[in-house]
Amino acid sequence: MKGLHDAPMLYLGFISLHLLLGHLGASLVYRLRFGRGPLAYRRTGADPVHTRLMRHISGASAVWAGSVVAAALWPRWSELPWGRPLLTLPPEVGWALSVLGLVGMLAAQYGMGATFRIGVDAGDDAPVLHAGGLHRRSRNPIYVFSYLYLVGSSLWAPSLVTLGSCAVLGGLFHGMVLQEERYLSARLGEAYARYRQRVPRYL
Image 1 (cartoon, rainbow, N blue to C red):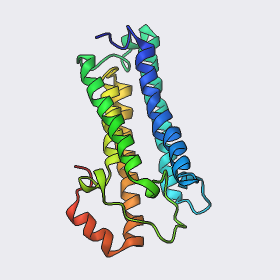
Image 2 (cartoon, rainbow, N blue to C red):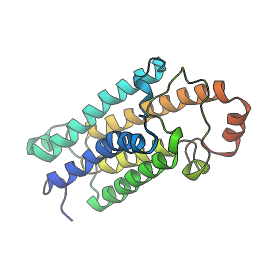
Image 3 (cartoon, helix red, strand yellow):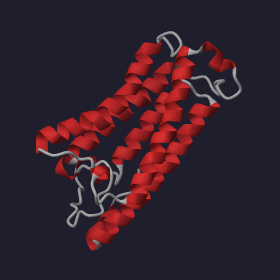
Image 4 (cartoon, rainbow, N blue to C red):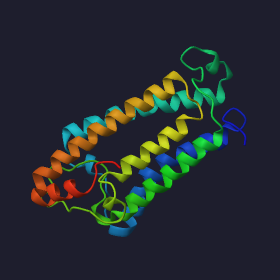
């Protein structure tokens, strides 16, 4: 199978699907299904800590995406100390992880139905606990599959910058999960405590 250097538009086009489907596409589908948008971080009651973490994720994602684009379109990038591949794997490995991650992320988002949110609305007085579908196996399947997608895509250009920013994104995802747990614990009390006891945070 052709690698990133040989078919850059194929790889970069697939990478763009995470944004187009995971954020823009999910918002459009949600609006068509329920008549409103899921973008809680734009509301007046948006949780400031969660929103700040989302901004950090945007910055780290830009660094990650920039390194992958550089690896795909600028041959000299792979000769630089921070752009040189740190390991060599068949591109099929990255494709398998990335496709599984993207499909799983979209399935988890769609499966949440009306409870799906992008961000946290601290002014929401009655959040609903979603414990069905993939959330029966993991409390955070969207984050799990999103990160699986990032890891798989990173293996196509496994430089110090790409893998480093991927690791930073993992830490930021974890920070968002902890913030969401505090929010749900405060709002849902015992119901969420029981859910936490029977379902693992990630896997």
